[in-house]
Image (cartoon, rainbow, N blue to C red):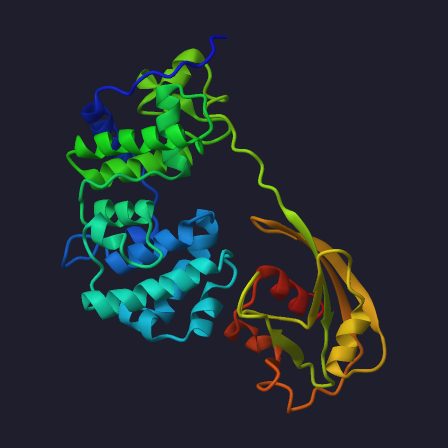
Length: 364
């Protein structure tokens, strides 16, 4: 089988048109793609929210959270004036919580500097907190039909297969060529919006990392990788992320009325400012539950209930979970010590990462 050799992408206008036509026929019906009847375009605020949510997160998970988030914060002004804890609580379950903080900061900047209107050009959008080159290009092109390029993981894969480019998509020169090709495509497009969304949708549905559906691809006749039978080898896989191992021991504390004791995490670091069951952490060994009980002023013993591993982008978090005997949760605990005693039904009012929600609800 021939080895992949990079070939330049040609006939950008034809490719852009084919992508746009394919998108019209194959686009998924997603809530952030709704067109406003009065303006005839998508809502820029909904697009901003969806773009931040979709970063490193599967569409299926975003579908569960998008509409409830929009109902809670229906406009950029509503989001801007919200408390961070409310924003994080509505984001719970999506992970990568830094995105929620960046979205919140972006909303405040849009209100303060742009009168609550999301800018329509990529250069201005990139000057807003949390909006990088890709997000700026996506909003400018998809919402306002501006010829702004976009490159994400899906787009990189499509472009590199067209070029039969065997390099890793993270290599500097490969990144540069991807943005260059994306810019030429969108500049040649009759509809930058349809071309860019076609690129993303093709990568998500057809030109997938494994087992690409080349028979369904509108660009197969121009694909260098497919012509060589090398689509499963192009591009080269990214290097596996190196993760540090950390140990978290959590003790679930309930009182006789079923209330749960929760505590707020530090303002910096992993899951910053979010809530959890009382927890001790270590980078070297699993902490003993007695450390937590002493900190809480509780006597007695805790019984182990569960252990599991939670993977983040940079860490492997090894959880061990204990249940404490029913305890007297003092009313004086909540605010001064960053603790709260709540019923399980009230957990949705607090920002909780997925493993902490699992811990708190697992034994109830």
